[in-house]
Length: 221
Image 1 (cartoon, rainbow, N blue to C red):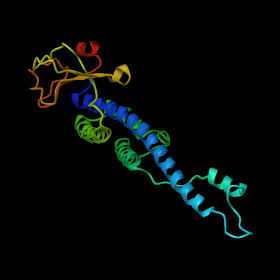
Image 2: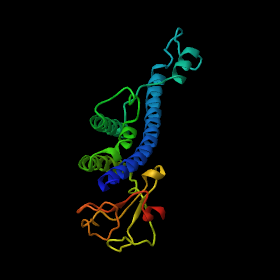
Image 3: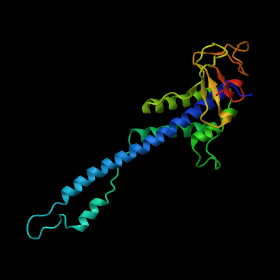
Image 4: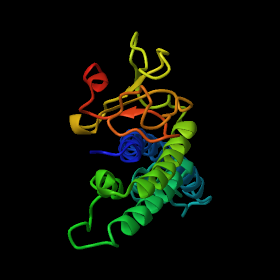
């Protein structure tokens, strides 16, 4: 039976996966903008240097086909922007996590995205390890979403009450495969233990409520 900490790690990994997709798209747009800016600056400098020399032996100018070709094919270098650096640091953190969770890189995992490696492990981790992993993943997810001004992950389950607190504050997390779907209540709605009316299959005190893919609540998502 999947432990709530494992479900939270699964939920966090799925949310981060979506955030990274948005970040990748933003990095592409950022790189295109920085490349265009670098081309403009380089072209302006080249045109300035391409002015005709005074005197009867002057060269260059509009009739200089060599100079004109040089300007039209400029491909200057440009540095990574803020979003690209965020991608690099996030990937480095995820690689470190994946290496430590699966016993360092193996030939089978070579070339795999580190988050994909982590997602393959979440339901096999010890609950205590899954809890710490969730903190790492949620932090990375929040950093990306804050930077890109993205909404929090998940969609509201309109009209459905939490079995524990009875508030209509449930959120469905269904962006990944059906086997990874979860439903959560607010972060302050905590399980009270074995006698909690939350209906979670595994009830552990002080864990924010989360229901996995086989729970009836998730079937309504």
